[in-house]
Amino acid sequence: MDQQVISNFKKLYTRELFRRCFEMTDRSSLTLHEFWREHFDIVSCLQIITIAWIGVSQINLNSAWRNLLPDCVVKPASRASAPAPESAVLEEIVSLGRTMGLEVTEEDVYELVEEHDRDLTTELLVELQKEVMEEQTAFGEEEEMSEEQLSSMELKEACQMWVNLQTFVQQHHPDKALAYRLVSSFDTDIMSPF
Image (cartoon, rainbow, N blue to C red; front, side, top):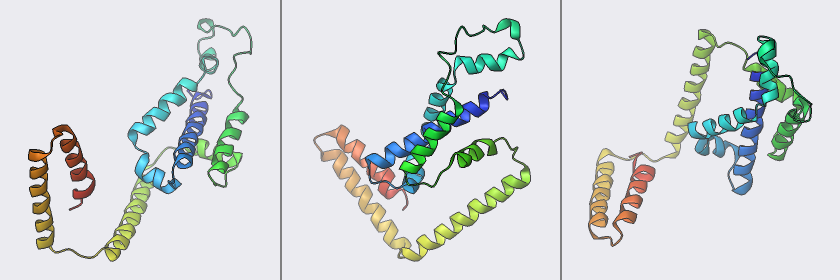
């Protein structure tokens, strides 16, 4: 896998990730920050991984195995089906990044791809976790300062009103499936913080 397969996969993954970011932010009023926070999840990541892996060419895989098992690898008849040169993929990533308003160079992308080759040590993981906790604490303090404090009595009353309304809608709405779907959505999206 160290015979450029991993490196090519990472470049293809980064290109597809940038493409997905661009498409989401270009088609809507989302900022890049909102995309990462609200629209990028494990499913999206797995979809991008699938697209990137499909993009790793047979020639690339053959060249990796040629060093290990030369008798088992078919020699390419021509270079016509060769994958796009590495520089073309890097240029496309840079172009997509700049289209999104990022200051990106080919060196930045290369550094991003190569940086993932480092092994994560326990110390580095502890440091990263500490940074995340500090960011979350700072964000939580900002949120607390901007929100008014609700008493437990107010929260209890609001939740009880929601339960009463939920029961009423589910019993009397003419479209039971729609009522169930919207009640579930409201319950998850609006009431879950309370």
